[in-house]
Length: 232
Image (cartoon, rainbow, N blue to C red):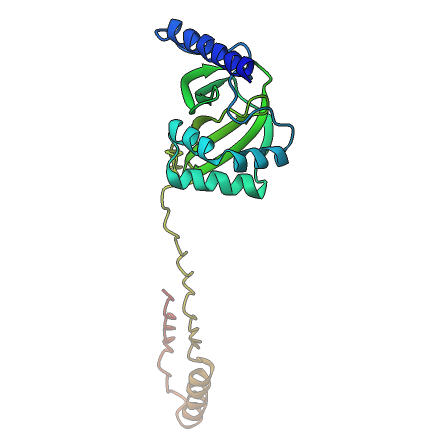
């Protein structure tokens, strides 16, 4: 027991020295996890649930250190208990990571962990803001990053496409009706006859010639024929 406590204390001292020597530089690079675990090594989601239940006070302290609100902590616990977690490859750059060396929880900021670290992811979304909790399987150190979802397509400022220029208005022209000429009235004109007057004069001449042999008939003046009216 004494050796174990001494080993944990030595790891904690080394970790603190690493933090002290790199305090002015960012980020803090951790080459190997598991020296100062929070929950210990975990092999399944069931073991994660059991460890969280067994270390409730320590886990709650760690959640406070990474900046979770009481409501976010309760949501995280509910999702872990329901198994609503994802087993993923944890991103190397973490905003905050907790650890423990046999005592209260501690926290590191701006941490880089080894590539390919496996663990669980719990998403706590509020609007477009997402608080993402990561728990590495090798140590159970609660870690956190924040993400912001992109705005919906309808809320983005999209360029307004140019509107096509409308064609000039051309009024519809109704063709004028074709005028129908009025019907023409044809007036038939007849020339007055000249045969009847001539026959009458001839008969009168014969009668007078029988009674008066010396009678000289008056000269026959032909009646001028009227000109027919010209059509206009």
